[in-house]
Image (cartoon, rainbow, N blue to C red; front, side):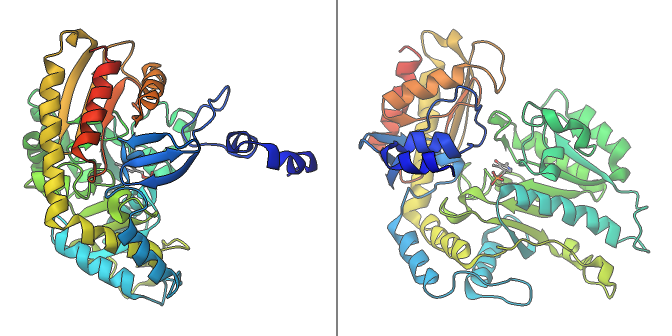
Length: 439
Ligand SMILES: *Cc1c(COP(=O)(O)O)cnc(C)c1O
């Protein structure tokens, strides 16, 4: 830091200091608007420096389940922090990691057998991709790279994270544009519906033998624009995929832990995944943690005398005891009848609001209203349907002025509130949307 800067720091506002030293995620830097300094969170409410309150209607990027600065989670974290804050996870273990794995295995939407920990959503999908590719490599007679199952199948408009593997299996979009020549080749198909299901099944039948794994966001594609598709067609597609022994990877980083009304979106499907990826709501939104769970079929491929068949992957903070403790505390809260009831209540309110939206006088302004559980989304029918659509910035500012935080993806407006949201707060969120839409 330069001396001049040091001298003036005490006179600068937090926004000015931020502007000097911080580069924010997913934020266009030139002429950037100063970020909003938040000093406190409580329940669904974020407080800024001036004490102005904002309802966090998108759960701070889809992570916060039980509200901000939750006392129960905080207390558990404090106790863990003064007991064991971190320990290497190769050759060592600890209670929070084991307890969390045991609890997850009882609630996950398949007969999973092992939990692999990492740091966030991107690492959880990165692990899943490596785990499934190496499954085929390990299952080869000789450990060579000449195995024939090399392709990964993924959906158009998918988003699985920002690291290179995760980017590769994500849609080629404005997010990945600068890196296209560095991303590995992936076999992309559309999400299934009644018009394309037969075509998709015949593509899989033709290519199936060469496909190692299929990665998908079950029923809701998040960052790709909160796009929803039906369980019925997905089950048909998955049936065909499974005929070819393709490893099915459900990326439930966003949909997990009640977001879609069920604990996991895969529960809407009869065809269940071999690998599931979790993060975001895993710790109730308190700390960064990723989980990749696999079935015994996958794990068995790594039980070999041959040391070359080891899964050589791990992160410094693998299974951080604090993060695991936060996840255990979040599960305590999530699985209480009261919270599950709140999830269905928000789902009902969302359906009621979607009816209101679809009967608006100026309905030409909006389109594609859709709901799944606590998630509701629609497009503002203005300009191109894309992430860089300018509608987003105006919408966010107007909502903030009214005390609600909503952050559209391009012209896609959505809400995904913490489960602790009150009736009064949810009504305020809906009213804010209606006001901005001009009703
Ligand atoms: C957010 C998200 C990711 C990436 O998670 P990060 O923790 O941001 O790395 C991956 N997959 C899905 C479906 C997501 O919504």
